[in-house]
Image 1 (cartoon, rainbow, N blue to C red):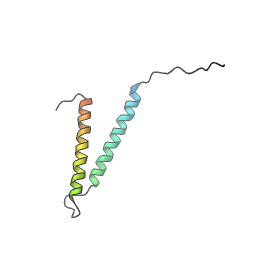
Image 2 (cartoon, rainbow, N blue to C red):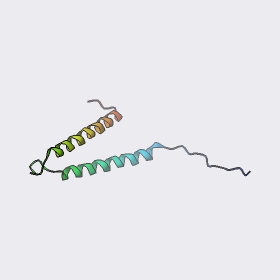
Image 3 (spheres, rainbow, N blue to C red):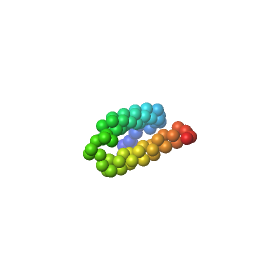
Image 4 (cartoon, rainbow, N blue to C red):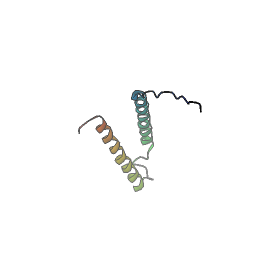
Amino acid sequence: MAKIETLAARPVEPAAAYDNAHQISRDLLQHIELQLDRMIRPDNKALRWTHVRALNLVNAQLSEVAALVDETNNARN
């Protein structure tokens, strides 16, 4: 049998992956901000309780994200 040679694994540095993930986070935040600006306005006659519920769900999830970022940064409220 022929001996199969493999390349030695190179250590993976986290900087490039972190930079990429950080940019994705910023892109998502920009997208969320644009979508929030497009949401129905309070004076719109088509406004319903489902809109309120949806926005409250968004706020709950954003609150969790904010808490995770705070925790990652060792921030205290």
